[in-house]
Image 1 (cartoon, one colour):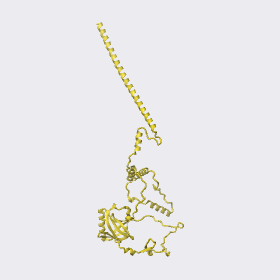
Image 2 (cartoon, rainbow, N blue to C red; image 1 turned 90 degrees about the vertical axis):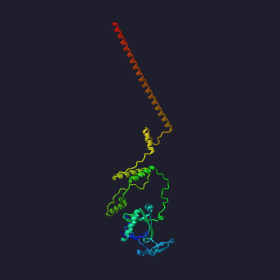
Image 3 (tube, rainbow, N blue to C red; image 1 turned 90 degrees about the horizontal axis):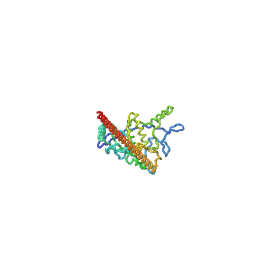
Image 4 (tube, rainbow, N blue to C red; image 1 turned 180 degrees about the vertical axis):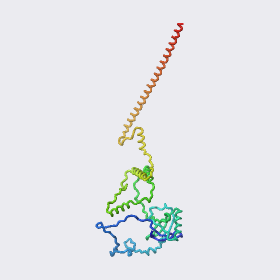
Length: 364
């Protein structure tokens, strides 16, 4: 990879020659401007506004525009003569925990390459020191005519540097947060947690630019003179969410089905039933299900219904009591009749025996 800057890392009294290499590259598809009428390319020419002549790159310099519109020429020699210690040096000023750097400050990423064999030992020393401390280095460096902040960290076996914005370059988010008071229910938070658990983690290497692929397919089709391949429209959109709970529940269900199709079964946290559902279940078990909206009886009707129910229950108890008394009386009468019949039978038998004994004595 081609280096864009050569200098050194200043690490206390240690100086490490390095080369700065871009760590990222842009894969976006760029378009040219054309004349719609004939397809001719639109080009921009650098023209001096005083004489109207086109100016070549070597003839172009830089200047600072003052408040009154006047131009103050600035040369490369002027900038090189500035007493700036970071002009060719990445000066480490502190070692801090990585989470103390606000991600909003992170800018362009670079790789730092050791500049030659003599730089290998101090380069490795700094890399291993960063690894063992589990910290990052905050540094100052100058690039493209301005001094910047940087954060050095270890990526594999390489020291990487992220350009950082200065703290005063981070805008205060005034008027960005919702201005209305919003209450988030526990049930909604539970569903959001369930959705996050269901989606789980992702391998960033598996993600790709769907839009760029679609543009490439469209360009290839136009070049070959064939119809553009049709793609299914992306799910979701910028529509207004009317029912947040329903949207969350549908999202959890869709995520669970998607993970299941991929060979993984996602567990979704079941939320406790609402109180209204519990009351409805209790009413249904008691034989009085919930009434449709707008058909609730009036208080007087409720009282009358309660009185009728009580009267029916009282009548039922009386009827049951009478029936039980009747059954008891019948059983008592049956027992009494049975005893009387048994006594009469015994008396008749005794009389028969007495008469038989008298006849025997008379014949003797």
